[in-house]
Image: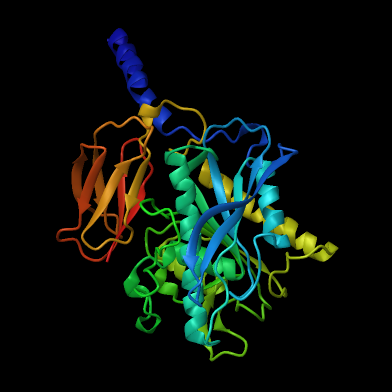
Length: 410
């Protein structure tokens, strides 16, 4: 009996080993993603990631600066895509605050990118600033798709496609929040005529790849509607000054010189996210104004230090969650996948990324309450997930050996 028990124990340990490997954690030892272990940074400037039509009808080439840790040998790395501020009328990918944040996180081991996007709008009114925000978010989506396409093809930047984060300051934070939570055309006010703008995904480049992200970094931003944050949504981290006179900390209006535009700042977003169970740590800059971390004064740099550390400490546990390896592992353990279009009306295309080993598996589709509404076999590299009788809303797609993905049906 004793020998039988030991044999069963040994068999149990052997059987559980593949699961343990499949849920192995990202290697955050030796200070990676926490300490600046890379003293040098390699910068690629003016990398073209798309083009789009401006408010005036001209075509703008979209460019970004990419920062990588020099000498890094990790095969698949997390990415932070940053968007600058400027009220959708000004600003640049070289702005001091986003540039410094990109460089600081690159020294930790991240790949970071600071993007340019379409700015300016006319007439100068509330409707058109909202349209400018959508155009800018479309450009950010194109940047995410650029890296996901690269991860599936040339792998120039060695990005893990499952660990891309949307990040922004002020107007850039509006964009990051909209990218993550404004995910259905039906949520856009009719007067903005989203179809004429190209839908939420837009036409800024790199079609056929998902623009979904793993989390959001919201620095002094806001959302147009708090109920865009729904159960099962990705986590976010927010930082905001209580005396912000440009973007309200809570519920308030924006648009100096424009008709009042009601928005919901970080404090109001937290109330909604807490209510629906979305992880959303918020750091409050008590008594501080707008983007207090921007600048080279000692005071601004102190705010920058706090911003860098708080966001770093939000990101690192996400990277350490089960199934989030960004280093070397057997390809058969996890099939990287892409889902498009998102949102969808009739069906979503499920595609195993090029260069990965595909293995059939059983997948489950869960609704916002966590209830399994469909179970099916993923049998081919390219396969459709049809909506059929499913109601409009957000669903989670999960399966053994793969990160949970989000599907949105309109």
